[in-house]
Length: 319
Ligand code: NAD
Ligand code: UDP
Ligand code: UDP
Image (cartoon, rainbow, N blue to C red; front, side):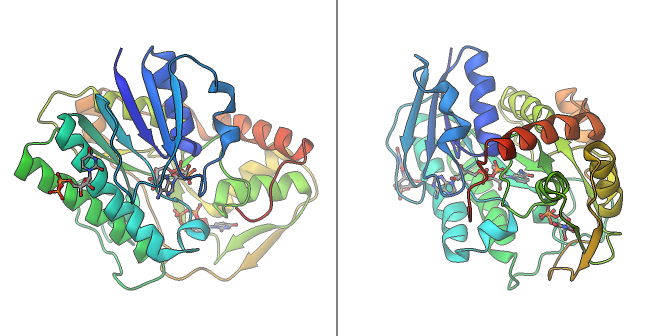
């Protein structure tokens, strides 16, 4: 049994990671400031003898004793990370420094939840880890993209300078139960709109593509990355290479939900990447990992989750 810190542990991915680590028999410390996370995501674990919850903002130092750290704290959807962009950069950069300082003191292995956004609007397709990306440093997405890029830099400098045992995972769009109903991401938007019989909002012409990974596959990739031998640092892409246009996604959601929603075309947000697809050959060779859950199956689980949430009337306003 290891003592494992999960920052951002009350969020979408973090709460699934806490579940998995507890089920594997570990002692889990969940740290979150509840900016986008929710106690609802982890309520079922409160009272578990090996689960501890701490309200804390990772931009401030943290003194605890653990063996491993998963650093997930950071708002992930454009509406949330653009709400207070300065805080977003601070969370990625100061948060990384504090968690790396903690890992250095404890000689603990530390994994960073990075993102496919480090590739920006890519001119290489699909994106292998060796691609350096095309990111606008001064746009509205930059607080997130450049914050995550700087966090990667810090991870590799702590590795080179202080011999820290680091793992950097670049996550591609992931979906599943416990996504926020109001976070504006495409999967949650389309499902909630379809369930309410509202128009499905397609930004631009809907021909832009994304590759959607089901949360259980992603978590398996995380856990396998954490177990790689000392010296394997990544960065490593974790995502599902199945690539769909937003129009295809809308069709899939409508086919499962049924109902009377129509498509409503809206302007494309600025700096919106045209296409994104992970090259997962490194994950296949290093982790013997590839995603198992097909989009239709993952959507079924996610739709069931949102249907229940809407039935309970619990789709909080704002965040
Ligand atoms: P999320 O918003 O559900 O989770 C982020 C969690 O971090 C929330 O619980 C939030 O309250 C917490 N948090 C934010 N700022 C904090 C701070 N300063 N101190 C402490 N806690 C803080 O998002 P998610 O989708 O679960 O994303 C988790 C991580 O994975 C993020 O780092 C995100 O950048 C990364 N990621 C996610 C995706 C995806 O598709 N979901 C894709 C790429 C990368
Ligand atoms: N830090 C922390 N917990 C620890 C050790 C360090 O939060 O257990 C923070 C502390 O705020 C420090 C940062 O991590 O500023 C970076 O630590 P490091 O040892 O790299 O640098 P220094 O302490 O010299 O600034
Ligand atoms: N999108 C859309 N309708 C929505 C929300 C998003 O067409 O209601 C588009 C968005 O413009 C982008 C894609 O869906 O091209 C994925 O958006 P999301 O915010 O989920 O993820 P990201 O852009 O960060 O990959």
